[in-house]
Amino acid sequence: MRVPTLTPAVLFRHRFGYLRIRVAGVLTAAIFALAGGRANAGLTFTTIHAFSGPDGDTPMGELVQGRDGNLYGVTQYGGPSEAGTVFKISMDGTFTPLASFGNSNGAAPHAGLVLANDGDFYGTTADGGASSKGAIFKVTPEGALSLLASFNGTNGASPGGELVQANDGNFYGTTIDGGIPRDASGLGYGTIFRVTSEGVLSTMFFFNAKTGFEPWAALTKGLDGNLYGTTRSGGGYTTIQAVRSKGRTGPRTGM
Image (tube, rainbow, N blue to C red; front, side, top):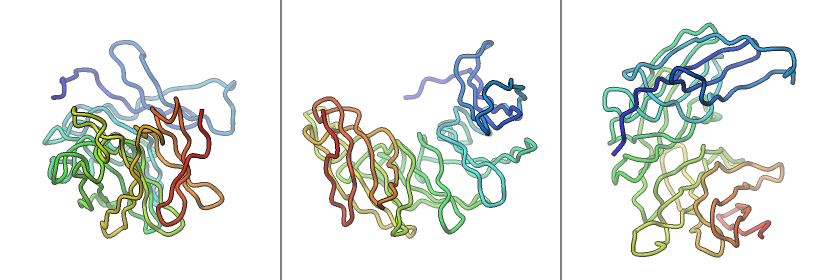
């Protein structure tokens, strides 16, 4: 169960871009961007929105810019069901709540959205869905939120990183949990999955202790068309994986 927080999550803007800061009277953490590498030019920060709970709480992942020029993101908590929200914010600071999660359509997104070739946004939630083990969703720029697929443990659980759209048009991602069981605790080693824009979910690879497990970060599409990623544990400390065509995968670098 989540422990409620009274710490506000705040979006800020400076002269070179946007950042997010969680504050409790003093600055504790920040994510920011500097345009043009002008890190020595000085910064001026301006609060553009403070989350209050009903409009979201604890924003997660990166903001992504849509084709309309607005920025889109998600919050892990907040909203009517305290299960997270989707929002957009314009460059001048106009904030618009777009959609909210209600457990059945997903809950607690841990990663940001990805802008797809069709102009819509796709993402994952670490909880909720049909089996309360995570979900994959689609949301339009207008805020129409739809559940695409759910994880059930066997096919993975708790996706963490952002989705990536590969050259075949499908979306690929990883789950931190699920797949092959580690022990009697019920935790799994994690999986690599593929999902179509229509919601057809396929498990492409099951991690184990030798290949590495607990892939927390998103996959990266290489110039060669393959997808690359890392595992947090196993594989003899760390492992970098390459996801090749037709779901084949293998370690590229191990220690």
